[in-house]
Image 1: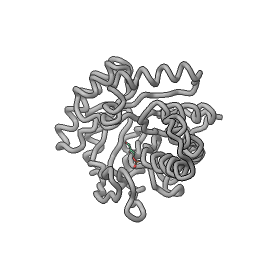
Image 2: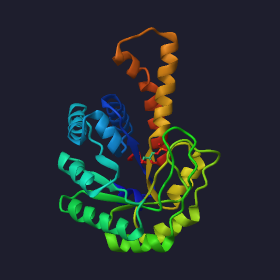
Image 3: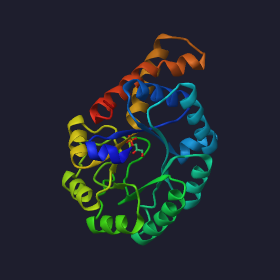
Image 4: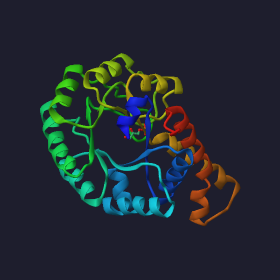
Length: 274
Ligand code: 13P
């Protein structure tokens, strides 16, 4: 998926999933747009949904029931240890991220190498991070980090990863002011590593910056908060006007807005296949 995106200079969307309905909305819209997609599952989201096996089975069953034919990856987002990655792989995930970026470079390299050995035996792709990408869950992110270029080259040469998420100034969650992305750094890392690059914290970045990031080597854009904001706004508006109590009606009231947002992202990223 990402190799093709790199060759043809577009980016594949990674949307985080939280429940059955979100998974369905995303799959249906990606199918309608004919776009490949990575369904990102954080450890927290997996726990919320009942564990990695429940999520993997949910995605596979929905995929079959909805006759989805576009490429879909079930991707572990920010796996925090080799053990957690192992569990996701055993449960049926098809793509994993090991995020050991909070440790020193040598530890990050060693943990990532261990994951690559394990994953590649099963034809599962590995994403990893260098330079810790900050942010927080409750708004106003502030820690902005930029990866050291020599660290990136050493890391990529030693680990044999498939996609690479260096810190280039993005943060998870809501941005305080304009994002300060370092496009020169992105381009250098892309040229020197020749790997598809991943941009985390893809929500709240102006469209023009996303287009520029794709020109500079970004092949996967991670989006979580944007869909959460769009969905919850629609649900809040619906509940202001309605005394509905059926959870199906409440959750579904965010479907149209969420699908529109997914469509807009696919157009922006250029991932719809011709
Ligand atoms: P946002 O919540 O900022 O979109 O970040 C998502 C992300 O990077 C998941 O890994």
